[in-house]
Each structure stands twice: as C-alpha cells, then as structure tokens.
Length: 121
Image (cartoon, rainbow, N blue to C red):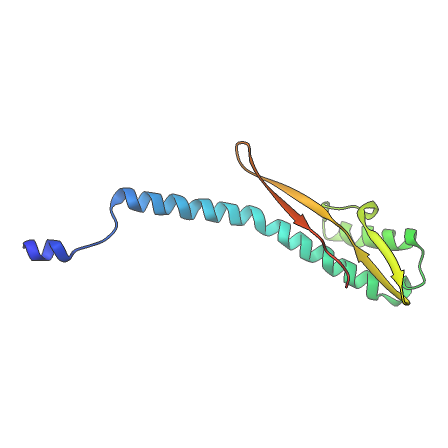
C-alpha cells in the first residue's frame, strides 16, 4: 500500500487553483488584446485598399481622407480618424500611414498600452 501511495503523484488542490487562476488571467488578457490587433489589421487593409485604388492616385488629400473615413465607418473603426493619417505621394504612388496607441484597462489601475504603426506599404 505504501509503494502505491508513493507512485501516485499529481498536483495538489492549492496548486490546481493557482494554475487555474493563471490560465484565467491569461485568457482574460488575451480576450482584451485580440480586438486591438484585429482593428490594427483592418486599418492596415484599408490603407492598402485606398493606396492601390486607381481613382485615389489623382485624388486630393481631402478625398483620400474621406475615402478612409467611409471605409473605417463601415468597419466600426474608431481608434484613429482621417486627421491622424499621414499621406504622401512619392514616385507616382500613394502611401498612407499612422501612429497611434490603444490603452486597455486590465484590473484596477493596471493598463496595457499598445502602440501601432499601420502603413499601406
């Protein structure tokens, strides 16, 4: 009987609670981070779409910003506005980029700050 008890190994109840708490914390943090990364990918895709649109190659800055605003409104993107976009026309090509940060509150006064730099190139 003593040899069988010696071979039975595993995690204790307090250990299991600690592992479960760590997994829950990681899951909650992940659920809060994923939307920010999805919005960044959507913004980058909008930048590429606008920059590759033949009609936008000869458009004014105002028209380019309006095009971005319409597309961002469809995707419910509120992280950046058209005024935050840097637009440059070089070598006959159009380049859109932006720098922005997103603050994500975790617990109490603990906040994550994510900095993004999407670009059409």
